[in-house]
Length: 346
Ligand code: SF4
Image (cartoon, rainbow, N blue to C red; front, side, top):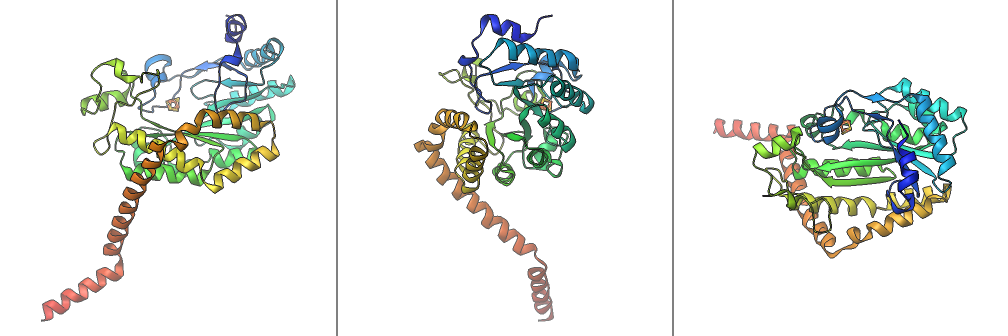
């Protein structure tokens, strides 16, 4: 079977494709199919490739890297687009050893789990890995459990381990899964800010027929579209057609826009970017290109209105929860008890 990159070499020009988290130009490859995890929203294992991860040999993967180096002289990076490349630690380390042996010059990126360990990441770094794409998805354990993510917030070590190993992180977050509320979306945004990864994406849940998430949304009557045409915008982009019991489809889109703005326009993030560019000037080109693709979302009038809308709601939530905390605090309870005693005494 030929490498996918042999087909690209005949029919595609890598200069025509841009992935904002990746270096440019790049080539995307698959080294395996399937994912053993059970995330309810994830279309690939449920509809296409199954839950058993089957991968090519380390030799075959390294050979494809060599092929790309030789046949795409402009290409600087490879994206390994397997659902989860790091399912088997031994396999990943074997691939890395082969790449180190052949003095691989291409940088690469791949999808990893939120709890990936430091040792694997150090091997990946040695073999040319530049960035890992991590599906954190939510900052709320309640939502993670309902989406069957199989990992808890306390186990989210990938960002920390990546920093220790010298890898960049592109973090993925979703809004609108089962059980989602404004409060849980805010937990996600706060966690994202705390982890302060190199890049982060915030998107509403897209439910695909055949997935558990779709069956849930359909049975709860949460899908607003009447026909599949409505699932795309006139420009051909994803159109959100699902809400939750607490949030409309538009609320989810608006919150994602709000989250992007809150995330990217923070001093801590701007400092991180500056540091990345100073230590790695080659990153400037990618950053500028990604920013140009993105700035309309950050500075649109709609985005400013969203900020006001959500800041007010979140402030109201904070006041409400501090009142609840006050009511439940031991001092208030003692005071109430002693008042009751006085009343009874009277
Ligand atoms: S771990 Fe990633 S690829 Fe696997 S089921 Fe979950 S979201 Fe899909």
